[in-house]
Amino acid sequence: MAVGIKMILNDRLYIRDPQETALGQKIIKHSILMIDELGFETFTFKKLAKAMSSTEASVYRYFENKHRLLIYLVAWYWEWVSFLIDLNTANIASGEERLKIIIKTIVHAKRENPAIGYVNEQILHRIVISEGAKAYHTKAVDRENTEGLFLNYKQLCDKVADVISEINSEFPYPHALASNLFEMHNNHIFFAEHLPHLTDVQVKEGDYNQVECMMVFFAFRLIKK
Image (cartoon, rainbow, N blue to C red; front, side):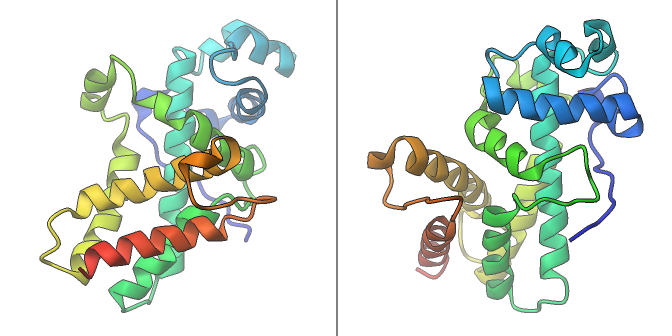
């Protein structure tokens, strides 16, 4: 699927929108590759600038610090997932069928969109799994939440929660289940790849079908109980 789209993200995440310029897109492209290679703790703007054959000052013209950059990347990915959910569930009347498609989309959203050449969705997906929680598990989370920095993720959870409530209007925890589906997806892929005793699913060669089956099992057992 080749779709040329621009993600709408909170302008407080950046100083200058990197989607608008060639340099900004280069920053996004190389930061994804470098965070995946080095890990977020080891990643620095100095190393990023060197990999880009640019200057550290040029990176700071787009992002205040690397934490804001991480939030930006995670928000970009969740907005991509939201876009795919809308695309894949269009004209599907059944709430149950839409939830199954939503779960499938969450699990398989890593597929690359060649029309956005500066974002490798597959690598960004790995970052969301391994580093994504660091975007909001911080002392500054309340202030950053007030600034709306996590709005894309919250709106995505709202979207899934609405479908859950449509299936069972008496289910008392639609938002909790919605957010848990996303966290379950991240955690159990990570567990399967690194801490297999913490999960019952297996991930081999990027095949996440067992994760999808587990999420469908949990979701519908809870909703239909």
